[in-house]
Image (cartoon, rainbow, N blue to C red; front, side):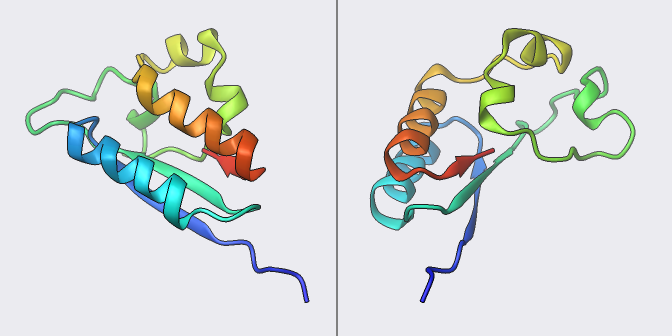
Length: 101
């Protein structure tokens, strides 16, 4: 019987506690083939109106990790991803053969 592919959502505000939660999820929760969806949480009072990602709908379709890692994609959306979180997601994608988004 094939293992069921799960989708795990993680809210991320890049605080130390959210980074620790990401590490825990990758180390203790994520199984091979699972998919992580990282939900970027803007700080209270942040102006997201200039960001293309949220411009029309307030949300965005999923961006696969390999595509998101491309500098032009990050620049197009006005994002500066956290290096530590990106390393955690890349390591998880390689070691667990999952799909981080």
